[in-house]
Image 1 (cartoon, one colour):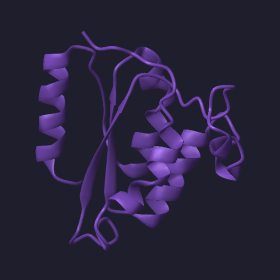
Image 2: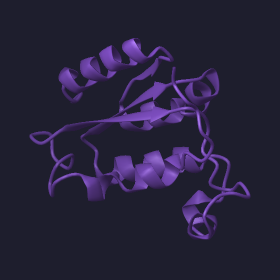
Image 3: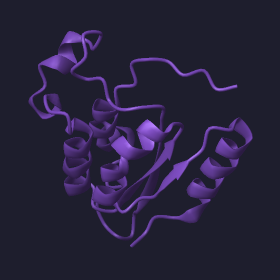
Length: 129
């Protein structure tokens, strides 16, 4: 079974996507990219257990920090689609803005076999124009 843990810092992960991709990828239509974001809930950046570094980041101070991070990343990398695989209903609801901001998709999947199939499908789908 899937083990759900607390502390999935999604907004910082989304903001770090440009640093995780090779230079130039996602910037122009000839170098699109797909990113798969697997999430089990909403972003706890403002919670008491969040690292001090995250609590001080100006982009991560609102309830919609994940949405802001997706918008910022989409502006930097307009040809990167972030596809959300939501492991819970809460994740699906909280991260709908990520797929809208980046022209990605959102799929709910809690079964490990289904999850493997979904990720394989997304990675083979190619970025949307």
